[in-house]
Length: 157
Image (cartoon, rainbow, N blue to C red):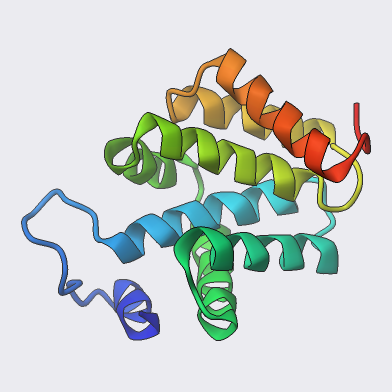
């Protein structure tokens, strides 16, 4: 898995892409991870809590080992820092994830946004934009937030 993700950055075609215009499983994981990194970094502080939250979510959601999750996280950080917009990441997710999977990704992003114990205005704005770009309704986005708050406790507004 790590070699396939690294191949994305070197310009080599992924082996599991069947035809032009499709996205590999690795691209989906990378796009999701990059959106989580974006959610974690918008408040200007990217600390251990955010990093641990992202690594844990990547392991849980994608069934990765600790090393694979850390590698994906590192690659996502590099990719996200070079990207100038979210559209490339969200397009991959929107095209290949089911509506339920997109809601799950929004829920993961809420969890990352709250990882440091508070929700910053820029993080809340990102979650609103992600909802629109991923075609997740305000209601579903709000319900995802409520589920996260129920799990972690009332730490934010």
